[in-house]
Length: 263
Image (cartoon, rainbow, N blue to C red):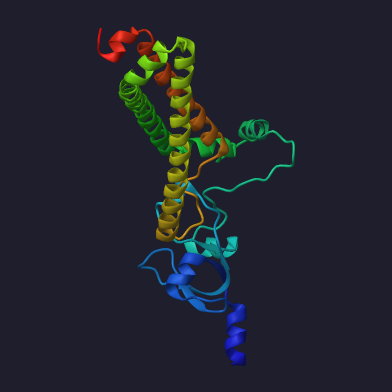
């Protein structure tokens, strides 16, 4: 037992990602063999920690496992001492990343410095394409829903022809009838937006639960912000008021006898 502890103390330590530790049933203190390729002999190491990587949309779909080694151990494993592919620099609060990158590139030899914002923008091109695609679908859905809402209001107003004729016969002003129909359209639109918001929250929760379990991550795949809710409700009310106003204007311009079916 003492000999095993002495041997483990001399071995390099590695940090294992939580997913990898769970899939291979690894615990802190276990001994593993780490190799650069499947053909190489590799080296023995001790699991010194289990870590949870920060959620990253650019890498979560790759479903790759991660190991963290001390830099000398990694260089020895790869057979490339004093050589790195990339490294990060943390700046003091208030420092300009663009200015630091320019100064480093002015004296650079064998490397190129980029602000993290530029790297994130370059690696997010796929997500920008998906975002534009979703935006196009949203525009089409809004146009289709506006047409559908207008058709519903026209049909609903047509059902109220007799009621509108009676109100006109008893002296109710056109403005009052118009306002009542527009208010009814607003209530319909508001009710629909509330139901749609509830459905959206439910669908988002199901989406997150499924994909977080599938990819074993805490990344949010679907989230609804207050701004999205307010924009959706405002747009629904605007479309509802517009459809109701068009349908009501068509009704109040018709003569009462025509509405009653005698004209």
